[in-house]
Length: 289
Length: 289
Image 1 (cartoon, each protein chain N blue to C red):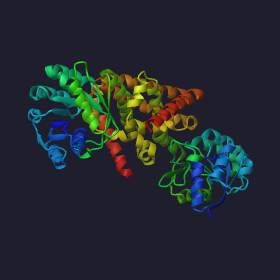
Image 2: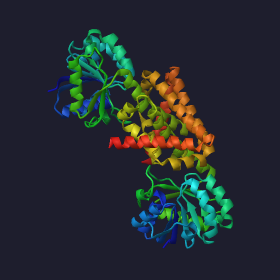
Image 3: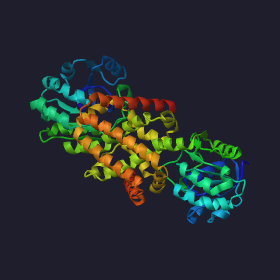
Image 4: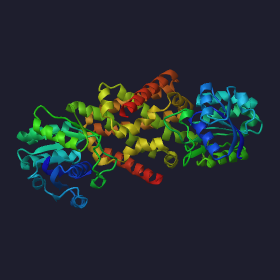
């Protein structure tokens, strides 16, 4: 048994999928859930994702060997003080947040002598759906999980969290915190902003009905992520504010370059941009295959 | 037999797929191809997409009842004078270009008394691949084909082109020319600009290698269309210049709104944008199902 008592704070797509996968692999004894909504917890018991639950965080983590924070980013920092008070001194804590800087700063302050037990994590997996109903045991298979251990992080804690993710099929990689937040701003946070902005832009146009009528497959792929949780993305934006603003500005200047090339009939310049992008995208495709 | 002699100028993904579909449905007698590259034409004969070919447009269209212009936009206008001279007086002409304003203006001038035979068309189908090797007979099944007939357009020509597309599984709709170009700027041309700009932006960043390493599924979907033909999209940009620039400006102001809301910590405003977009996108999803 890898984990005797697992406690999941925030039983949603990620926490629920991890519990399902660990149970299927028979790597976990008891799984306890904690959530703001009791309805969700009842659902999670019904779906056999968790064994039991508490609405109170302190009770939910009291016996836990491993605690997963699976809440939205804005909630994660708020649960830390309660965890600090009630988690066992040797319990291992990890999270699944898309931005790492904020939670780490908060954890360093709040967890005090238990901070080395915290292994910040971010599984690069998910869909535009959320909630425990959307969870499934194979979500992490062949996906990357990024851990951003600190110099204070306990090697044993780091090792166990690594084993946990590898045992559910993920590939674990370690990144520096700042680096993680910058890379994710570019690969994930920016595309979500573009999808939201595009749908909102088209919805505001005069021809709106026809626009959505004639939208083809490319558009559907492109904007699928605009169906993601507004609340989750709101939190991500504010958690990764500086990196995201820098990335948005960089993107805007690339759009301006394209617009200018069209306006000024700079045929060669426009071709150069498109060819450069196609070459990179084709290469990306090959590497992923 | 719907069409005795079909001539395809520009045997690529669209022209090739149409020929395959019409042949499979036994709706066409002879299919003649014409292309700049003889290699492509030999390939098309090998693949049984066309029966024979000419490198010279005048010869290729001399016996044709129906002529499809399947060339890139920048080439289409150049082939019109040759068609005007050599097509039969009752031959029906259509095209498959993504922008309709330019070719229609050119055709009105060039085709003169044969202009009523021209039925401007645009199948909303395609992939990021191109070339006759990528063509397949089911490409148009359940896809829309937009026709933009003019007041001068012959009702018979319009009827035959409609039948041709319907017979290969497409749904034909008619739109006003200007309307078509504006709607397509929003639903297709803008997303392609965003995909090219995004890939180019990320490729220019310091963390470039890691960025592409950690890019997940959403990113892959989002940028798939950046693998599209740079030459084709270059032509589309200049053909639909005004509508595209307007649309790019509108999009940029939406991105600025998001950036400003993050910068100024306008939590409610950001949530409002994301929720509005999600609602529209979810609705789009339901309607497409």
